[in-house]
Image 1 (cartoon, rainbow, N blue to C red):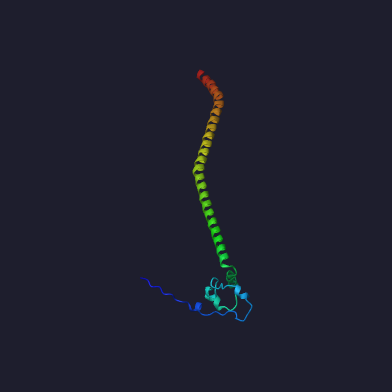
Image 2: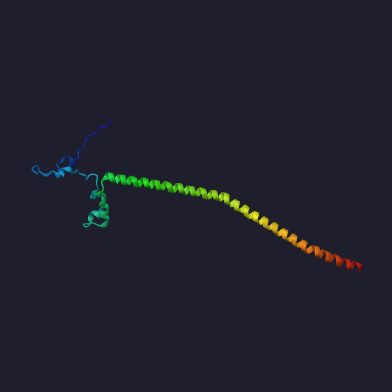
Length: 156
């Protein structure tokens, strides 16, 4: 069985300094103690605590105390949501581009090879027709001349 024992914090029990009872100026009663939710000197690294003068980094670090915790949380949530949205958009876009490029390569490379091969075949057919046309033009006159010379020799 578990036995729980309440331990009291001495800082919470001791009496805190406040306005004097005879003081009629009650303006300070409207403010609440926000030190518990704001950063303190113990949150800073030890190198900052030892310096007497504020540096620019300490000033920037202290700016978080000027923004209320609820506003800081909403800003952090908005930033986190924006980061998540941008990250998922970038991943989706990258995957989409990868699919399009690989799909394009798978389809276009064989198609381009087929087109080039077809052009080579058409060019070879043209060359063959040109040779046949050239040989027909040369051979009928050349064949008649050779037959005439051959017949003359045979008759001799």
